[in-house]
Image (cartoon, rainbow, N blue to C red):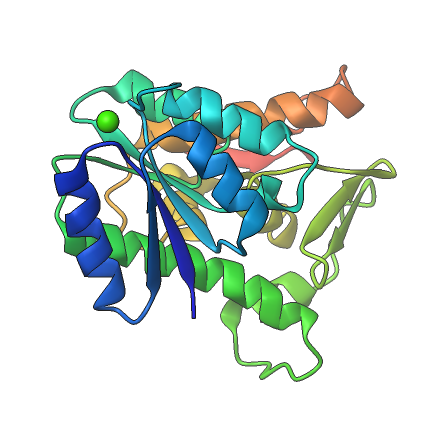
Length: 244
Ligand code: CA
């Protein structure tokens, strides 16, 4: 059973989430502060965290940073942030630190569950790629298994990792999906909407700024290995492509 960790100090919100999650056959575990969350992550096999920005003992951003920088197994756990309505800055910061997605308060529990499922689907398809009994029908799998022509990159689709100039890139799921899309179609100029579909889904209401943020962090990570080249080209008013 999928274990979802709810990190939220308001009981009413936690109750609503707990109910929505358990009615979908998943197990909800609720903690109301950051230190209890870290303990739960260490002790239990959590598949996804719902993380509120405002917690009593630390901000959700601080906690997310600690999770992503930890040397524990849970550092890659998918995180769905709960942010305040209209606080675009919160969403941008969250994505920059490594959140996988966000939902603004007030939210509908159905929306949250849909996002959880979308994130888990991506995570699980990664897992099934690692298994021996691949169905071979997954579109992502087919896409990912094509060799790339960008010789500086090595895309290990089974391990869900991308190596650049011999270095293994430490990417969030969104950054990985973006770079995998670029490597798959190195000549294509992707619109922001197309990239949103690559990273999330066609129904995702995410705005262009979210994609810009992921591109920004991806560029920064690539630049740490090759400071003199911008590997992602901006096509003003349209979108992005991989440098030729
Ligand atoms: Ca709160």
